[in-house]
Amino acid sequence: MLRVLAVDDELPALEELVYLLKADPRIESVAQANDPAQALRGLSRMLVEGERLDAVFLDIRMPGLDGLDFTRLLSGFASPPAVVFVTAHDDCAVTAYELGALDYLLKPVRPERLSEAVRRADQAVHLADEPEPGAPDEVIPVELGGRTRMVSRSTVTHVEAHGDYVRLHTGEDTAGYLVRIPLAVLARRWEEAGFIRIHRSTLVACGHINELRFDEGRAAVRVGETLLPVSRRHTRQVRDLLVRRFRIDT
Image (cartoon, rainbow, N blue to C red):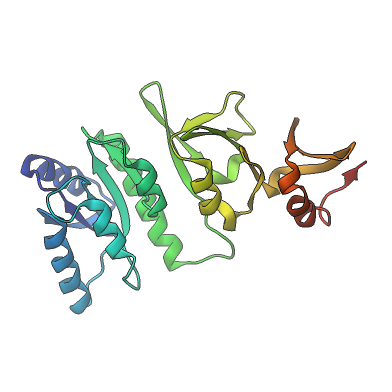
């Protein structure tokens, strides 16, 4: 069961968030704070008294210390709680992702989206309690026509850049899923999970590559039925990483 903290400077929004969290059977207790400064004081008290805090659900735009600054401060704790942003602003998603936020919910909060965020927090706590070799899987929420689909990182074969967005490709889709985050940010975040840069606009999951080929000095990798070009800049790095694992077609 999760012990969580809700933070919002707007009382009606805070009360609604606390109500929804308390209604979730996976939540053991919900503390609340009207601003990040009050939340930090409460968190410090909990740590001194040996209490556990699993996740923080907080707004971003608040007077004084905002939600992003609060999250940066959390990184200084030995075992920081998971962070879920609940905000009316969609322009901070990239920064939130860079800071390691577990989820990013837009107001008004839909109960099913909050439930999914709680599920992810619960999963993160269990992974921390029972660590496994390698990087744990990650789930990316993708909005599709008013519905939210959860795409597991382990199913992503490759990623293509589209400005400030990326398109996630899996083995079961054709068009892919558009997510607002720069490719460079995703490349850093997923590096430990085996994703490699093969082009300035392409990121590939090493485990999904089934062939490395060279044709007239140009390299390419095959992912399923898709052949992806490797830029000259990245060819040597890709070859060094894969040549011992995959057959080279010359």
